[in-house]
Length: 152
Image (cartoon, rainbow, N blue to C red):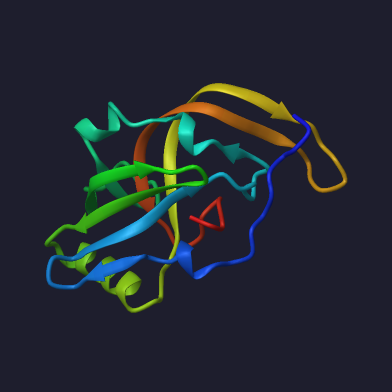
C-alpha cells in the first residue's frame, strides 16, 4: 500500500458529539481511518457489525471479564469514521465512567475486532509499518483512557 493514511490534527469533532445526562447517552466516534499508534489503519467501511449488534456491549478498557459499562444503541459508518450512540448502565461504576466523559476527563474509545481481510503497510521513514485492515468483525466497543487510535 502506498498511502498508509494520515494523522489528522485533533479536532473537536472527535470528542463526544452530544451528551444527555438525563439518559446517560452520548454520541461518540468509535474508530477512524487514520493511522493508529501500532501502525495500523482500520477501514470504517469494512467493519462488520451484524454479530456485534446482537450483543452491543461497551466494556471498560477491553476487559471481557467484567460486566459492560454501557451498550451501543446505534452505529453509523461514515467515510472516515464510525459513530455510535452509547447508553451507560445504571451501576455505580458505569455512572462514574459516564461522569468522566460528560465532564471532559475522558474522551477516548477503542474497538475490539477480528480482522478478516488486510494488506501489509510496509515500514518507512514515517513508521514501522503495520496492517491496513480492510474488513473486520467488530466484537466490542471499549471506553478507554488511552486508545490505539488517537482520533477515536
